[in-house]
Length: 375
Image 1 (cartoon, rainbow, N blue to C red):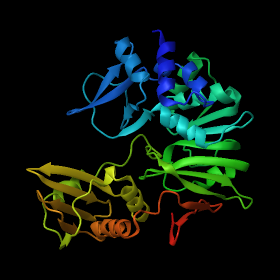
Image 2: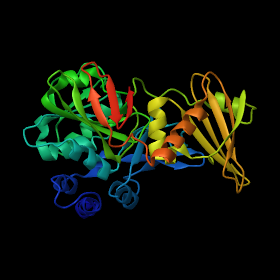
Image 3: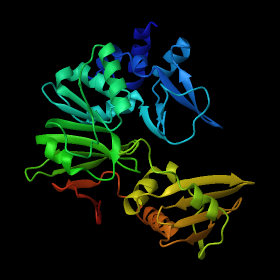
Image 4: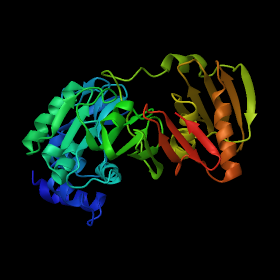
């Protein structure tokens, strides 16, 4: 495959020519990092084999898009022709977002970088092209991911240090920069311990679209802000897969009468598409699973939580309100309505642009105006 013109086209689409990351994108053969991937379909995820169709391989690898490479414990390298079902657990993130995260890291020559979430190795390859191989360490909890990425990185002439371990545990060295391509519920204390004086970390908060940047402070903590840009990554995991979705609870309450029935003054909201509301709700109540549906013009949303809390809201065709059923120990929809009232009354939600203060133990406090919240 003549990949150089394709990589140059990707660079023009994903990176400004004046960016110091432009050249690394041009010089990195992304297709060799992603020889197989999954595509979504009605029956699940179907494997796409790059070498079997080089035209499709080039089109996928050199378009600014995310390629899912693992679903549950099933990696595309090893999958058969039958679709697999589950949630994505690894991917090659769209290059423009990879570059944005690296740019927020404010990386310069001489910095030592920890790349959290090895995945296919593409972000490490870009970092090596910019900083040099010896300056880059990449870590992932999944041994197959690290071993396959290491092999592919060597094949394209890149040799960062590749480590297999849980990134939230004690880290193997100290770093000037930590840039994470996976999300965390709050900043691990191990990251702060491994961050050198004056160091900087960049990550996203799990279950939100919030990018957090922070610089290490003299007390061993860090301070920074939630960026105005948005991004969402898969969450860190300790095993081969994430906990199963709440299908059993969903089937139980799908059409069930609630313990509480009320009318919300707002129509049904697709929370996962309303990034500010989704992020604010997750900060206040992590772990909510959202589902939506439309039947004969009636829009329905469900909120589910592992603690047994649930909510179902329905907006009839032409209506501006919704009927809400709720059950379990918490009233999840009430939390969402409180956030929506705040949005209406203040014209915005305070999550983007919030100030961030991180204690040495990882306790993270966000604040903006009169609003504050501690993770």
